[in-house]
Image (cartoon, rainbow, N blue to C red):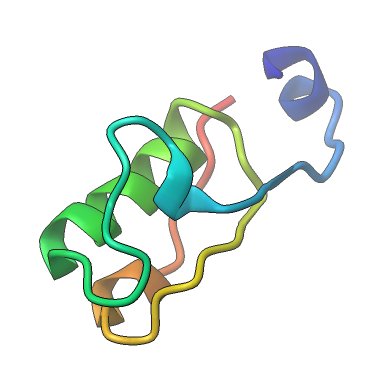
Amino acid sequence: MSWYCHNHYLTVEGSAESVVPTLDDSHPDPIAAAQRVQYLAQQGHSSVTTFDWMNAPGAFTPWLRDC
């Protein structure tokens, strides 16, 4: 994935709640949900991350992806 990041491709990580270790689909720990999205942006090089959470406001925080 780092090649795509370095070459300015947009990448999408779907179903962040299903990445191991999984988080609750509807009521995850808000801190764990935010950390998951941050991890996927910075370590997984995700441009966009999708998830099913509605009650995790920290997960909606924009993070810079790390190339």
